[in-house]
Image (cartoon, rainbow, N blue to C red):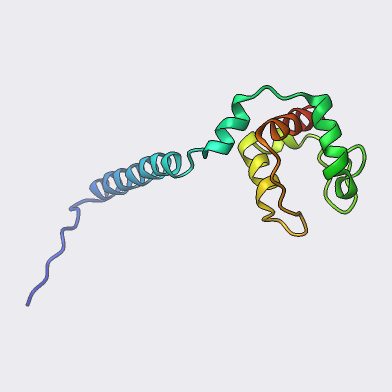
Amino acid sequence: MNEQTVKPESPGQRIVLIALVTMLAIVLAIFGFRHLHKPDPYVREVLSRPGDAIQGHAIFQMNCAGCHGLTADGKVGPSLKGVSARKSPVGLIDQVTSGKTPPMPQFQPNPQEMADVLSYLKSL
């Protein structure tokens, strides 16, 4: 049996084909990422609430300062100064609630508490 594959006839056609396949892959990746990473109801609730940085500081002192330092400048855990410039609000929520980075424990603050903590972190 003689199998034939379709091959572009010229280098220019190959470049166009590669460009089209690459663009298709990028478009699929962008749309697929957006659909797979829609915030869950908890995240939407947190992001819909105005946070109070003063209340967030109090929550931070009770739950986070033991590892991240009283002024969030690092201790056992890393410094959180400028963290909101390095991580998105969704990324910060995931970090706090997931405990994916040992020895970071998993916390489950209610949506208002999480909004407050985000406001505090933004103020650092």
